[in-house]
Length: 159
Image (tube, rainbow, N blue to C red; front, top):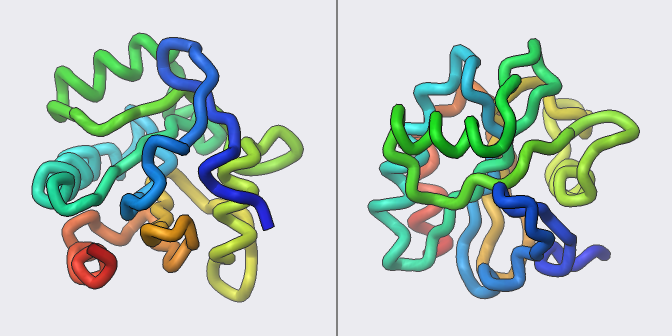
């Protein structure tokens, strides 16, 4: 099985990194978009991050333009949008694909570990969320319609 922490990811500044720095933390990994009906969830994600970061939660955003072209900006524009409009202080990485032959290995791993309804792996839309425990195991997958505040009880159990 792939070690979640060793999968290479690209920071918004273009630097290659991994999630190694988050070993031992509870992670909420989300595919995001700036021009989506669910975009206001950035506010709720930021609230979760602020409320639980001192107890070990890290929210990680991964912008994706595969759904209705709702993330057209470059990485710099995405960072500016998140900061100015939602005060996002959690890490937002470089834009990537979550589905298809170009799906990023991180999302391939997450989808395999936590399939969706009826066992389908494909992500249906922006703001699909994956909750990862302190051991790097994916424990739950949430639909885009699931509001961040509705995840609080599940997060609390892992902290």
